[in-house]
Image (cartoon, rainbow, N blue to C red; front, side):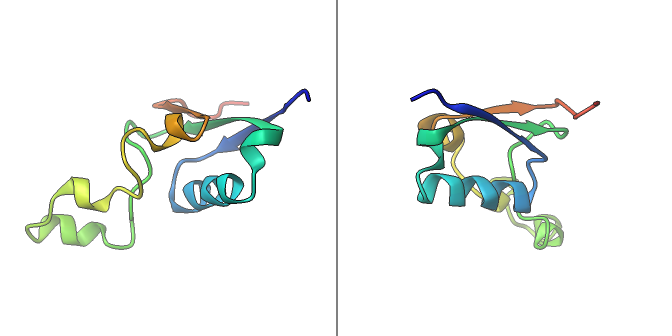
Length: 84
């Protein structure tokens, strides 16, 4: 089976949740998935960002482990904004 290309623009909370659902429902078997993230870091919990300044570690805000995308067959490109 030839996989179709799927580009996810944005590696925020919604983009990450979308990728989680793709993995959960077998989307990685059907699609070659690439995620473009403008920021230099993987998805993190922006809702609780203020807790970072209240003695919490930045690492505790990440929504997944550093290797989650690779382990699930998703190519993550950080510091790569969508231009066109």
